[in-house]
Image 1 (cartoon, rainbow, N blue to C red):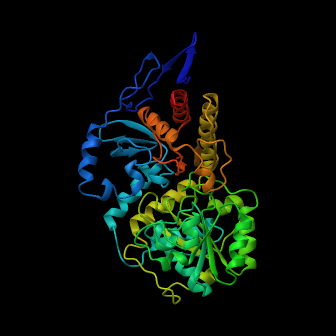
Image 2 (cartoon, one colour):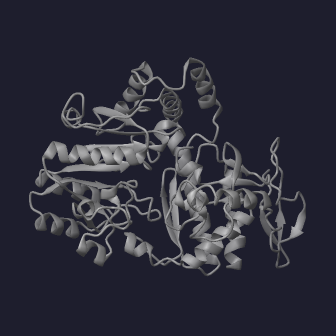
Length: 468
C-alpha cells in the first residue's frame, strides 16, 4: 500500500516519506516520521562553484538564457546525470523533473531503448553528410502521423525549422509579410523577435538589439485567441501576408490553450486570403497526440515545424507540409536551405525509436491521466491555501498561473504574480521538485513518471503553498 506523503494527527501535519525499491533517495528526504517544518537547506555548493566559473566563460554563465534562473532568483542547478523521471545535480541532490530538457524527454531521460539504438549507431558513425536510409525511415514515421505533412526536410533545431519555413512561405506566395502572435516563440530568428507591445508594434521595432528594423517591419503581430484582431491585420495588409505562424497551444507564455473555434477560424481566414497557415509544433508535436496538436484539434495547417521529441533528445528540427509547397525547397525548387548536420544519423535513430515507443497502446492516455492528476492536485492545493491559481493540460503538456484567470493570451499571462512564482519555484526545488525556472514556460510530463511521483509532487506543493 502506498504511504501518503502528508497526513494530519490532532491538527499537526507530519511528513511520511517511504523509500522506493532500488532507488537512491534525494539528500533532502528522510525515511522517518517528523513534524513538517522548513525543509533541510539545499546544498548547492558545487553548483555555485561551477556556475561562478561558467560566468567567466559563457555569457551569463549559460548557453540559453532561461537556464540562468534570472526570473526566479537563486542559484541555478548544475546537472550531473539524468534517468527516467529524475535528475541529479553535481551536489548529488535528486529531483523529480518536469522540464524534460524542455520537452524532448517524453520517454524518460536516458531511455534504455533509445540508448541501445544510439550505441549501435555510434559504431557505424556519428555524422555522414550524405544520404542515409535512417532519414527515409524517420520521414515515413512523421508523414504517417502528422496530418499536414506530405514531405519533410530535417534540420538541426526548432529555430532553424521556423526560419526555414518563414522563407518557404515567402518564396511560395511571393509575399513578404508574416503574421505571428504575441507571446508565441518561434526561435531567435530576427523576424520572430517582435512582440505585441503597443510601442514596438506601432514603430515596427525589434525586441532585441542587433535585429534590423527592416526585418521586424515585415512581421505583423496579433493577439492569440482573438480572430477579430487577425481579420483586422488582414484588412490592413490586404494581399501582403505570406503566412500565419503560431503555437497551436502556447508554451512560451506559460501554458495557454486555444479557445473553441480559434484554430478553425484561422484556417478559414487563411484560406479566404490565399495565405499559408503554419503550426509551430516544436513543443506540441507528438506530445499532445500521435499527430500533434493538429491531430488533437482536427485542424490541418499547410505547413508544420517540429523539433524536440522528433529527435529523441538529440539536436534536431524539421519542417514539412503539402508536397506542392515543399517542392519549392532546393534542390527540388528555387528556395535555398542547407545544413551540414541535417539528417544526422544519431538524431534520426533517437527520433525513430522515440516515435515507435509513443505508438504503443495507451501511451497518450497514460500521459493525459497522470498530467491531469498533477494539475488538478496542485490547483486544488493552491485554492485550499487561499491562492488565486489557474492552469490546465493536454496530454503531457501543462502549466499554472498565480492569477484568477482565465488566461487566454500573453496579456492575461502577464497579470500573474511573478514574485509568488519565484517563491513557489524555490520552495519546490528545496523539496526535490525541478520545475521550469520561469512562469512563462510550460511543463512536460514523461512516460517514466509514476503516480507516486505525482503524489509526492502534490504533497510538496501543498507544503509550499501553505507557506507562501
